[in-house]
Image 1 (tube, rainbow, N blue to C red):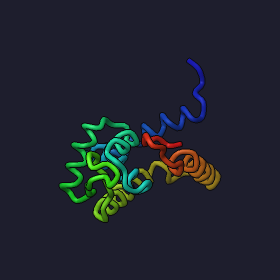
Image 2: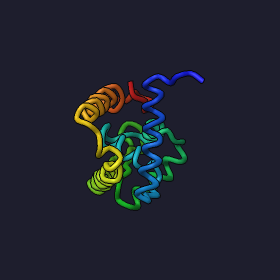
Image 3: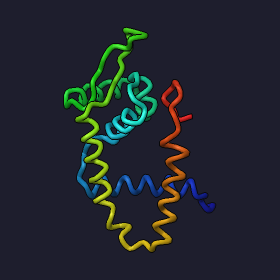
Image 4: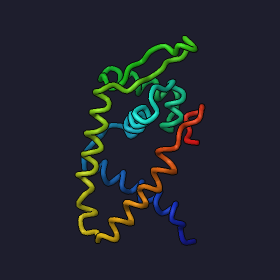
Amino acid sequence: MTDAGPIETIISAAYSLGRIAAHRTGNDTPAAQWRALATLEREGALRIGELASAARTTQPGMTRLIGQMADEALVTRSPDPDDSRATVVRITADGRGALARWRTQLSETLAPLFADLTDDDRAALERTAQLLRERTIDAPLDASGRNQ
């Protein structure tokens, strides 16, 4: 067994953190829904195929998910003005609110795991979060729905 590099360690820890948060909150909303809403919030309106790619799910699965989210008024669907065969999805105010509440719930649920961090550890975590955001979350999506 080899020593995992810092990126591998972060990926594994983030996955574990997500599992812990989902278990502790009892939130049974599919993770794909939160990924889709977060992507729409960050990127703006996207075609279903682009959103499926960005959220790492299949296009038929995303179509079903978008239907459910539209029924809950979390997103709206409209024809793509450039291609009437395609559908463009936008997050609604209700979708933004649900996403904000979910993020708050995660933060509050996970806060006790980090309550005893030293100031230096907290600063290191904040710097790591900033670096990860710059390299991943803030990176724009290309035409296929992938960060550039």
